Image 1 (tube, rainbow, N blue to C red):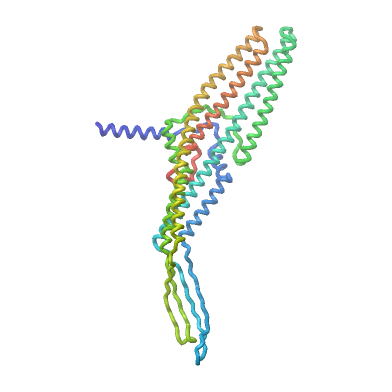
Image 2: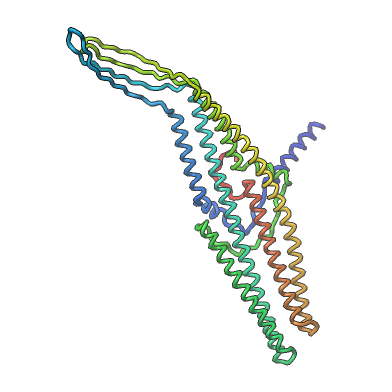
Length: 417
């Protein structure tokens, strides 16, 4: 029985983790393929991809090693007292031999360098995606404001027509016509300002992501993904490219420290020489071996590289703390935004009902036009706040999914992601 209970607990744990690793992206996001294409074309991502090619070339260089063949030629004339002079020459070919332990370290350094560069590409894409989300929802925010002000203008124009009819019929004072027209003019002015902000936001999005289609008018209610704060934190940190890149950098620095320390055992230089002496009467074939005598500089270089590895280890710890705080804030922001939108939507609905009742009371002569216009303005502000909270919640949810690698997955990511 205890064994079965343990298995059940493990299955429930895995099911909980699975729920935390799922989530439906908000429907008002751009098309996934269009977003991926826009991210791949971002200069920041292309620069990281170029640095990846640099790391791949560096790996090839490390595999080949720094030793090369060297040809040495020497010519001389030997003078013999009491005898003839002789022309002599010597040719030698030499090459340094990398010790086996150093070759293995160079291979590993190259591999880790490429892995770090791959993580930097992923981090560049992640940063570009964060920018895309910010600019995208900025456009949606301004577009929603334009739409609500347009609806407000239409409502106020209808109210103004009713007022003019009542004035002509003698049921309302002429001053109400001026009041209604002033409200319409103010709403049109606010609509124009909102349209200007929308054009600016769209231009900013197009400037950074020119290949991305403009946002459409797709309303989407925020839905918080399943899972708790701890589960989303684990999911986010397990797939964070920045943290993984720093970890690779620490590993590479430690390998470089080992490699620099290995240089305290210098590589031998092996040579093969052939000499023609005494005018060809003597021919010499020999082998040479030279080994540098290590000095204090090699030991200091090894100490320097070890200190660099220690510094990067502290950078890793600081990065983990910062990312933990950011992931926690993202979860709290998303969960709080969904609840805030629910309340804002309720407030907007109540404000709309109040505005409708006020308008009805005005038609019955129970309230003046000022009360109607104030109720309309209050309802508009409530709807703008509700739309902003809705889009803010969707942006927070999208950011949560993005950091957990559940939004716009990239086929070029490493398998462990």
